Structure formats: structure tokens, C-alpha cells
Length: 311
Image 1 (cartoon, rainbow, N blue to C red):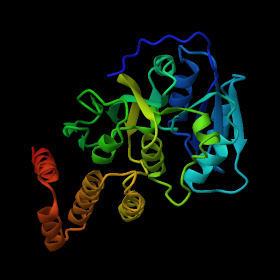
Image 2 (image 1 turned 60 degrees about the horizontal axis):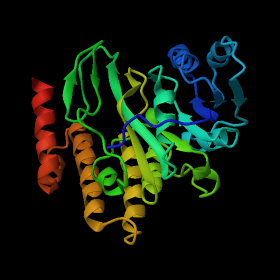
Image 3 (image 1 turned 60 degrees about the vertical axis):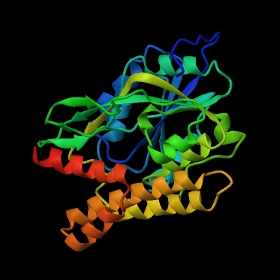
């Protein structure tokens, strides 16, 4: 495991990408967590996707020359908006933060040290899940119940580092708000967010990067995810499943890069997500069919989910 003890001689500029569409409710917390970073050499690229609320007003109340505001000409998908924001970045490294999440104050400082290893192209880390909903949620790996106004670590085990493509296909553990990458990934290797996959565009990008490059990991909490009533992820489950299948088709079409056994695990994840969706629709027969097709790992995960649900 890579530790957080590397040193760097210089203080490279880090570009922070924040995409916003009507994010006024939690925006101040996110911006404050950036402004208070112990690592000071950064710029914030704030891409406003034509918000109609007070997002711009809140952003401009932070009088910081490192805060840079850009407004979209037209409203676009999240993946396209991220690509537009990337085109404005001047830093050697790029980090990402959504408007409803926030960072630990030493997040950038811990991560930049890992890039002293020149073979590392992307660094991620663990994060806390903060439940601001009015009811308990089941979250994390291993799954646990998080009561209202309580928090829990997302991954209660040591996260992997190195050449970890197969691991990530089987068990994806990279939170978007924890990612930092070298800018050269987007310039020299022409990687971008897939504009045909908006909700899961980070997952596809990370798998592509990890298929060629070494990944670093800070095995400590470096960010905070906020669960609230306005979270968009999981609201359109059909669209998410459609995008999972697009990623599966891509993985399956590249047998020289992605091992069949790992891709089969990814397909199992889709079956599991489909099962959860069918249960939410009370489709009993379809749910039974999907459950029987699951691997032992996902059968066990599902049974534990049901147990926690009624605990």
C-alpha cells in the first residue's frame, strides 16, 4: 500500500473543477472547504450550467482571486459540462468537487505528495458518508445502516493502490470527490468524460485510466459525501442501468484490456442493481429471477441489505 509520506520539492498548481446547476443550498460549505485547504496553490474552475438560483451570488460572495467563474452558453449534460470546465484548467493537476459535498482540510496536501511517484496518474481516497435525510439509509461497504444526522466511513477496509484495474471492475471504490489526476491524462492521452455517459462518466474514465496507469490511494478520510433529499444519483434508476450496460459493452468489446472474469463480475453488479430496481417496482417474479442469477457474493450482499432494512 502506498502511504502518504512522499515529499515534493515544488508546489504545483492544482485546478479544482466544480460543476454547478442550482446548487445554492449547500454551495457555501463546499466552497469553504476549498478555501480553507492547507495546500494553498490552487485555482477553482466554477462552471455554472445556467443555474436559475443564487449559486452565482453565493460564489461571488467569496472574495478570492483563486475563484474563477464561468457560465455555460447553453445547459448541457454533466459530462459535457465537466469537459468544458477541464478546458479552462491551468494547473498541472486536476481535482473534482460537487456542490453538495466537501473536503477534509488537508485533502489536497495529502494527495499531492503521492504524485512524487512519477508513475502514478490518479490518486483517490476514502470518505465519510453524512446522512442528512430524515430517515436511516443503508450505505457503505460493508453495508451498514446510517441513522439521520449520523455519519459512517464509506469503505471500512484498506483501499487498493497500484495497477488495480481488475479490482475496480469487480468492486468500484473511487469516489468522484476524492479524485485527483495529472492534467497530462487529458492532454497527452486525450482522455475526457464520455458525453454519452453522463451520470456514470467518472466510473468509465477511471476504468480507462486504470487500464494503463498506476493508481495511488490515500487510505484516510479526505472528503465528505452529503446524503440529502435532492441527491440526483439513483433518482433515474433506468438511466443509470442503461449507462451501466453501455460501460459493460465497452469492457466486453476490449478483451485484450479487460479480463473476461472481471467483466463478468461487472455484469453481476448490473444484475444486482437491476434487482434493487425491480424490488422498488414490486416486480416479484422478475426480482426472483434476477436473484437466482446473482453470484454468491451478490446474493450475500442482497440478503444483508434486506436484513439491515428491517433491523
